[in-house]
Image (cartoon, rainbow, N blue to C red; front, side):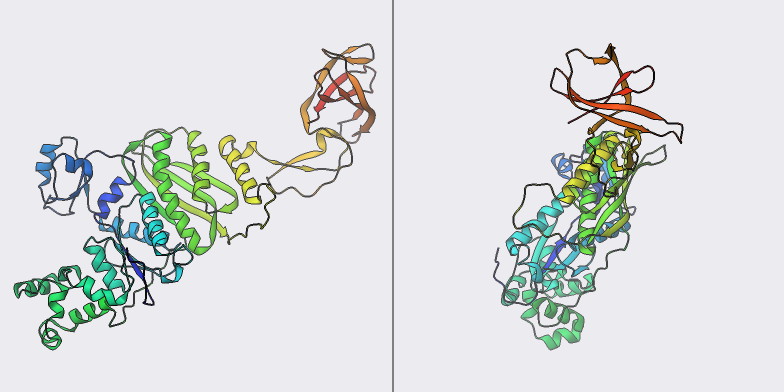
Length: 485
């Protein structure tokens, strides 16, 4: 790879061959022999996966012959609409690297990366990051880089996974490439081939005036744009305001891990989209489609906005583990229902070892995803001397500031537990040692919850500090009400 750059711009062309086949296969880690056919009556194999190739199937072969070779052959039909939607998703994901993204022809995305090389550690590091990211999304792509977008597309269409950083190398690099790699009409390319002009180098060796008169100025201009002799503007890609994407699974799935494998690829795509817009997700909806039942909805509510794909996948794993599906899942649809601005966070120069606010929220959200939103809550103090009424539940993170000078246990039993008594004193398995008390609490006569108690702090034989009280009624019963940490 040549990392030397002298030009002002550097474009990366991401070419995804056989995109419909990739869309079909990306929902599972391993697939049975699968072929792609055109959406017409020709019924020929356009491409196939590795398992089908090993079985002897080749592109161009009639589908009926492929079926004869593999009885359990999966056949998917090319769908240009799905390809266009998937390409928009890839473009949205790519905006996390640079805001200059453009959709090229079918299965191709262009991104201008000269302005972000330093941010991502140079050309080699950025190139590796783009390739690894596409692989995580479940796509196989050819990534070619060149100073002009047309040159990058020609190299990618030629299957050359490389980087040309110097504009002066373009003429030598493009010369052996076939003219059919340009976006010119096939009829014109065929006419040139009949004249013995097959490559860009052949074209450049002929007089320009004669070529322009016979084949039009458009052909000349495209080659000039590829060489950087003419401006090569590209329409910018505009990501959608509201993100949603779907994925069709190659085979019905009911287990959590295969579902999570497919959902993770959608979440990674969503994370790239959120990074460009400086947003974090607070409400996420995953629809699990079935053949004979309504879709199962999985809702994730986050207390704080996040676009960390790993965190979202962890929460989704917890939720999926608690859901009982009516039947196997055939499709997934991911919808970002609510988002909030989420800027970059500065790190402390001297870390104090304590978890950050975001890390604390992650723990809370993890517990809520596993135990249910109602099982995890905050506590806020309430001005009442009765211990049962001195604390109230609140949403996590929403409790107001409180202050209490009284000595209270952290663990308050839901209901006071009666204790045996030996005369006037409480009785336990081992003798109790009095540490503090009594503290008299006598209130509540106005709301039919009258409390008349004397509280004591004691220590039992195991060393635990207990919070006991004795009723001030005639019975003088003893109760255990709390345990200190």
